[in-house]
Amino acid sequence: MIIVTGATGQLGRLVVEHLLARVPAERIGVSVREPEKGQDLADRGVRVRRGDFDDPASLAYAFEGAARVLIVSGPADAAPHRTAIEAARDAGAGRVLYTSHMGANPASPFLPMPSHAETEQDLRASGVPFTALRNGFYADTIVRVIGQGLRSGEIVAPADGPVSWTAHADLAEAAAVALTEEGRLDGVTPPLTGPEALDLTDIAAIASELTGREVVRVTVPDDEWVAGMVSRGVPEGQARFLLGMYEASRQGEFAEVGPALGDLLGRKPTAFRDVLAAALAT
Image (spheres, one colour):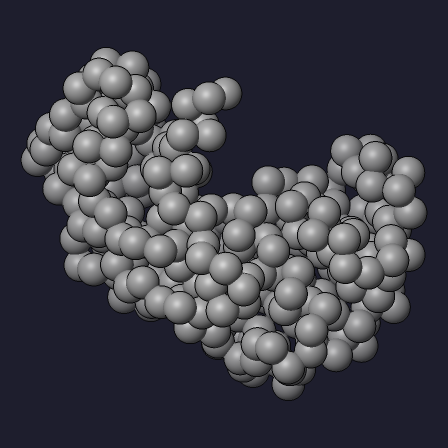
C-alpha cells in the first residue's frame, strides 16, 4: 500500500489525485490528523486513518501495511519528520519518500532549510531506501506574499534574488511518479524546479502585463521591512522568519533551474506566469 501523509493539505491532496489516476484506490492510504476531512477520499475507496507526527502510536496504525510512505513535510522542525521516518521503517515500508526542498542547507538563514537538511540526514541513517524530493520553491508562496502589492501597485519587500518558482501541481505529479515507478528516483534528487528563476522585479513586470496596470518593485532595508510588518500586526518572530527567505534568495539558494522535473513529467514544467494568471482569474 502507498501511504501519503498530510493528504488533506494542498500538496498531499494533489498527490493523492495523481495516484488515483495511476493505481487502484484500494492501494492508497492516507494519514491525516482529522480523518473527517478525508471523507470524500474514503468514499472513493482510499483508506483514511488518523495519523499525527506528534503521536507515534497513531502513525503505526496509519502506516500499517505500507510498501511506500510519502512524508509531506510540515513546520520547520525535523523532530516530527524523524518520528514519521521511524514509524514508516517500523511498519516495514520498502521506501520512504520526503518532500524536501531545493535549498536544503544546514547553514541557510531561512529556517526550514536546515530542518530539511537534518531530515535528509535522518533518512540516510534510517537504513531504509529513501527518496528526498528536493522540490522547487512553491510558486503559490510568492503569489500570497505579493497579494497586497498587486492591489496597491507596489511590491514592497527587502532585497531578494532569483527563485525557481514551481507549481504545486507539477510537484505533486512528480511525487506520484516517484511513488509508483520504482527506480525513477533514489536518494536525494536533483532540484525539481520550474522553468526559470525570477526575482521580484521580474514578477512585478509579469504582474503588470497580466493585470494591465503598472506594478512596481520597491526595495526597502531589512529592518525597515520588519518594522513595517510588525506595525501591521505581524509578530516580530514571524517577520524575521520571512526575512530569512529573502536573505537566502540573495545568497542564490533557490536560483538553480534544472531539467529533472521536466524529465519526470515528460513535459515542460508550468511557468510562473501561468500560476499567477490562474490566481488572478480566481
